[in-house]
Length: 108
Image (cartoon, rainbow, N blue to C red; front, top):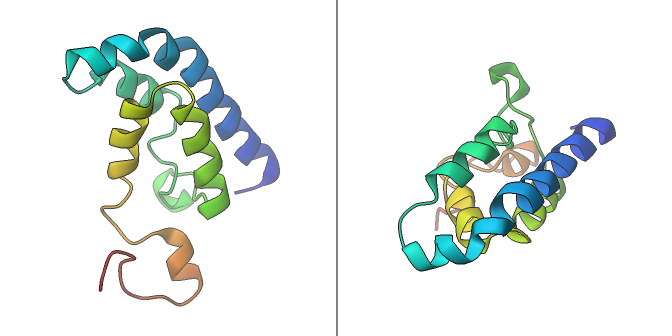
């Protein structure tokens, strides 16, 4: 991801954390259900494609870029961010493929 594109993703994550996640974080923790509205806000900010390939409309973020976005979101609501992050482990991490690593990161 280019520097300007990375910065836009981090800025978007910080905005979502500040404006959407943080104000309802206590209620999200207390209510126990999945934070659907908060996850929708992350999607609306274009962050669901964070690690997806550019050819499929993703941001093709590397590990450092992914961590920066996750850190920004976690500052708003850890529960929402945890659920968001869980869905990025479904496929091999893009940075593992770039180094010639052919199996999923979670493989033994």
